[in-house]
Amino acid sequence: MRRLPAIPPPRPPLTALDIIDGEHRSLAAVLDALGRYVEPLRQHRVRPDCDVFATILAYIETFADRFHHPKEDEFLFRALRGRTREADPVLRRLQHEHAVGPAELEALKGALLRTRGGGERDLDEFAFRLEAYARGQAEHLRVEDDLVVPMARRFLTPRDWEPIDAAFRAHRDPFFGIGANGPIGGLMRRAVALA
Image 1 (cartoon, rainbow, N blue to C red):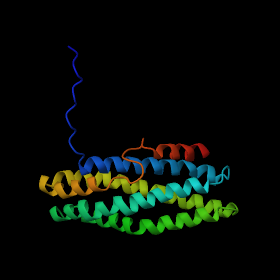
Image 2: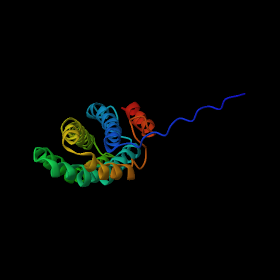
Image 3: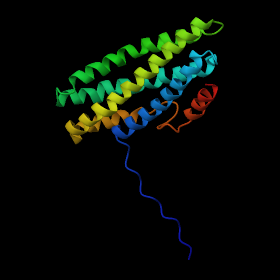
């Protein structure tokens, strides 16, 4: 008698920390690809492919600024504030960065548009803004991973995690899924290849 393959048990649902880790890895992959483009721009070896960059920046705007950061502010940071004052300085800094990030991204998009038919000064400005943006966002992720997540693990109770987990499960990366190997990888490889 032939045996049917065993059906694996269902996986437990992802926690907010699993999702945050995956989302941070996706964002870090995008930022790394952007950062690799800076030096060739500075040396005027390449001109930015405006379509590729516009797509990447639209991804960051939609995913990070409209989905990821608001969930952190409303659920994770609020719960952490309710459990400890120790997190207050770093949370103030991160929320300020969440608030100014969209304006920095708009300035970067404006600099990108000026490179179409622009001169070396326009390329230099775009390279400067691109480097500052990528570096700032990478540092932002590092602070969340190295400071906020350990404090959340230490101070939040299982009951605190329930609404946080639910919120992060409700809205996932709207385009590319979790992790650096999602479909955005092809777009990132194209950007890196151009660099």
